Image (cartoon, rainbow, N blue to C red; front, side, top):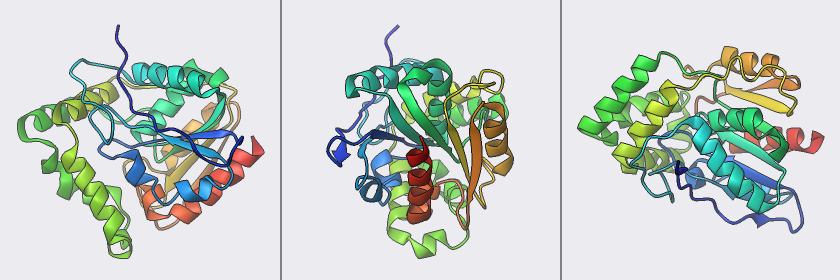
Length: 257
């Protein structure tokens, strides 16, 4: 089976420092989502980013893939980077991070799971979204996601980056987005995470209704070495809404591991 072709940037930052790999959420480009966090992390680490198929710098996909396939594709890159590494991913990127914990824990120093869950709701809902995107395209989601992605006041406080994130959603390849939805329909790591030894930070946004605090608490309590932290005045895309706060929590966590 051919693994998804994922674009991964060359590391930037402090020479000789550990690598941090940052992952996107569904509908975003990692370079935009993490734009204001990368310079902060790069003072201490070498930082790379990866994109989902058909998002950002990654080529579109035409064949079905699973979350495990995404993790296997990243694992090959992590080996090339000379892992183990620190990882942080948002939403679907956090799901891939959890799959790395389960399937490739030896490649991780630690994993920060940001605004994510060990499962994502009703599978039928994901299949329905995939069908809708194939019929109408990703721009149909922009208004809905602007309400789900951002906390009250975030768009007014950070109009440029929030607007660019919504543009990345509209620009995402329709079929690749639909295939991501179908991968999420089959995703459930609630049992597989049990007692995994990789240190895990489960981070949630105060206003996130997609992946609320309870989801972060479940992740942290399931693994052997997990903890939870909240980000005030943030919703589902916390790194773009509160980059300084997210960067500070990541540095604190990575320095411990």
